Picture 1 (tube, rainbow, N blue to C red):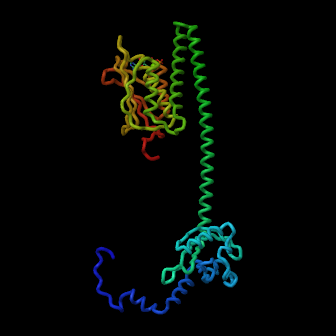
Picture 2: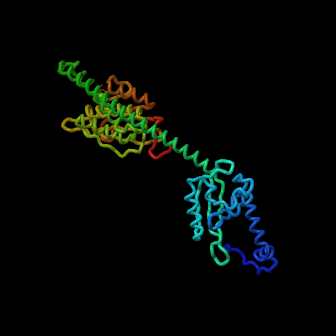
Picture 3: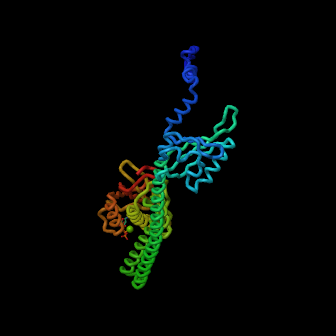
Length: 378
Ligand SMILES: Nc1ncnc2c1ncn2[C@@H]1O[C@H](COP(=O)(O)OP(=O)(O)OP(=O)(O)O)[C@@H](O)[C@H]1O
Ligand SMILES: [Mg+2]
C-alpha cells in the first residue's frame, strides 16, 4: 500500500475483491485453468514425466500449424524439434522432473515447415503435496524479434567492416603523409644547401646577403612545415602548442629566447596555422634583428588572447622601438610584406606600436573561420 494512502474501511464479504473472486470462482478451478490455456497467445503444452506430449492449447496448435492434436499426441516432445535442439530439450525435461525451471531460445519449424524461433520456458507442475507430476512448456513465437536482432547484428557487422576499411585507409594515408613529409623536408634541405653554397660564392656582396636571407627564409618555411606535421592525424591543430613550439624553434635557431604567456586553448585549420606561423616567424626574426640593444639580447614576448574583436597574437620586445612614423603596411622590407600578405589571407590585420618596455609591439588580429575553442562544440 502507498505510505500516504488513507486507511480503507474494513471490507465486507460483498466488497472485498479477493473474497468476491473466490466466491465467483468456487467450483470452477478446472474450467478456469482451461480457459487460461485456451486464451493464451503462447503455445502451451503439458508433458508427462517421460517426455511424452499429452496436451497442447488451441493457439499452440494454430501457431505450430498442427491441424489435429492426434498427429502429435503421446509423441516424445523432443522428437518434434530439429535434431540439434534435442539435447537442450532432454536436459530441460530432466531439470523440470527435478523441480527446476529452464528457459531457452531455439529454432523449430512448424508442422508445415514455416521457420519459427521460440522462447521456451519449461517448468515443473506439482500436485497438492508438492510432488512434480507433469511438466509445463510455454513457447512464445519470437521470430520477428530474432529477425530484427539478426538484421541489427548484420548492420553492426557491416558498420564494423566499414570502420575497419576506413582505419586501414587512414593508416595508408598516414604512411603516405609521412613519405610526402619526408620528401618535402629533403627538398627544403636541398634548396637551403644550394642557396648557402651560392651565397658563399658571393661572400660580403649584396647578392651574397640576399642569398643568405633567402636561405634563412626557406629554413623558416621548413620549420613551419615541420611543426605542422607533428600532429598529422588531427584535422584541427592546437594553436598554443604549435606556435609555442615554433617560437622556441625559431628563437633557438636565431640565438634568442622567446617568452610565452599563457594562451587560450584555440584549435585551428592547418592552413590557417601555417599562415600564422609565417607571420610569427617574420616578427620574431625582426625582434631578434632590430630589437636588440648593444650588449643586450632582446627580451621577446609572445602572447595570444581571445578578444571581443577576434584572436589577438602579440610579439613585443624591449629594444629601441620602431622608427618614427612606421607603418607596417607601407614598408618596402620583405618581412613586413610577407606579414601583410598572410594577414590579409587570414582576413586579419597587423598593427604596430610601442611595447610597455619601450620596444616594438606588433599585434595580429584575426577571425579565422576555422578557429574553435577546445572543448567547444562544432
Ligand atoms: N622589432 C623591431 N624593432 C625595431 N624595428 C623594427 C622591428 N621590426 C621591424 N622593424 C623595422 O621595420 C623595418 C621593416 O621590417 P621588415 O621585416 O619588413 O624588413 P627587414 O627586417 O629590414 O628586412 P627583411 O626584408 O629581410 O625582413 C625594419 O627594417 C626595421 O626598421
Ligand atoms: Mg624582417
